[in-house]
Length: 154
Image (tube, rainbow, N blue to C red; front, side, top):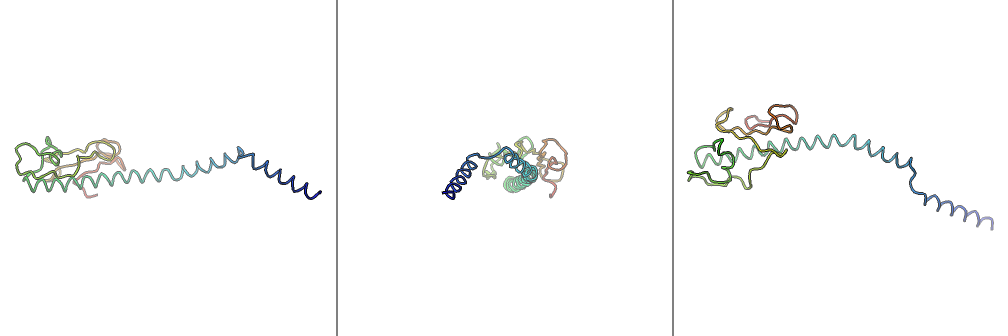
């Protein structure tokens, strides 16, 4: 009978421990590990996001350049600054040679949600200037705030 009582006591003690749940110390240890993980991983993920936005802006500018080239082949000229890139989607007045639309969807905004800057005649050669002002939305800048432009191969 002594042996049965000891087994019963151990079983009862084990059940009581399993009912107690998580201690405050255990919870703090888990939260500390999660915070350290977030502090190490989050900046890397955010920098990848910024890099992806810059890459997307360059890809969009290249797509605009291709569409503008097709527009010029059909019409003999690039759209003026006043008409803008909207001429890639809708026929400008008095332009019967227009064979568009030259883009499958409306003109997108840049990856930061602002419109691209279009200028023709441009200041950097015979082609139009297309500019995305980067993360800060201001001319100039460095890193992810740097301008992304059509006239530089980047």
